[in-house]
Image (tube, rainbow, N blue to C red; front, side):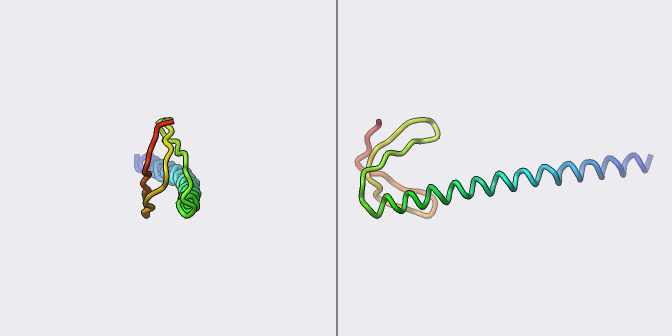
Length: 81
């Protein structure tokens, strides 16, 4: 009985460890994507050009980047495309 409990505990530990590796990989890819978006927003805000932003919902907005924060940015003169 003790062997069975220990083997189940070991199996559960190994399964949780394996799934943690996948989350780390997905998170690093997401971090790369966030960094790319931040650099693009910074470039676009410096030039004061009109930008088109596609939201995750599929809506597209067009306007000028007014403010860039650490985790957000604001558009002005916004129009829906």
